[in-house]
Length: 304
Ligand SMILES: [Zn+2]
Image (tube, rainbow, N blue to C red; front, side, top):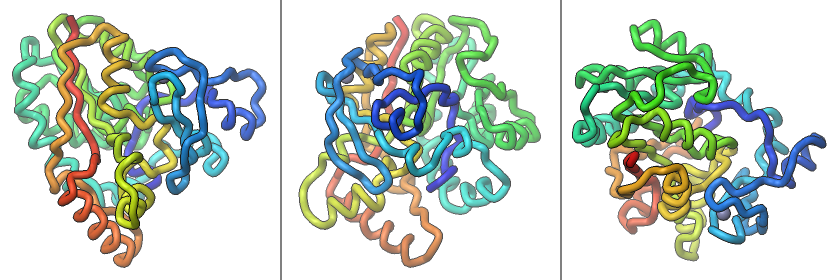
């Protein structure tokens, strides 16, 4: 799943204690929970590549160990044409299905039609939004992904969101699709998203549902967590639940929070380099879908 998603935001300072000790850096501090400001974490479990820590106060889950395996995180988002081809092969159909379903739901926030996508990748969502008459812009850190999107005529800022020079209170909608879980500095990013929205505008984000990490015991549930659930990749830093993400956005002045966790089957990609892995993932995913186990959720939060 490496490079499966082009993310937004750079990792300038990793500050989970275990990660810092592993990386040998000395100028970092223990992570402060972005949802509740607690600094107390406990190790809870391991999911495939990731060992997880839980905020003792609010329950937010964070990945502790990915840098041990992968080194500097920036390298994960330095995508190539091969990554783009892999994305098209394994992920694009499910993403387009999701975009198709979500776009009509954005219309209730339309006034100026200004829309910003944080982590706009190759520009597929920007294209579909433009077709529905949104004046859509993207923010994306990958040079190659920006080049692809710009070659199709879309406006993309190749910068960290915090560095982009755009007008505050000017967007009807800011969206993040499968991005927020990648951000080490998620607190300041959400704060900036809120500042960019006009009053009455909405931040809409989709992210894997961290409740899946606590789903039922048994072989299939374990297979789901370790083998098929989308948060088992090394790039995901925070594993939000509707509760913890709501806490984060509320702290940044957003309200009227809605959670939708009824994603369609067509929105679930089945990835894997070999047919054997893809068949296995398909069966586990199908089982989890029938069982109704948590997968991803979409949060809508309105600026007051
Ligand atoms: Zn917390």
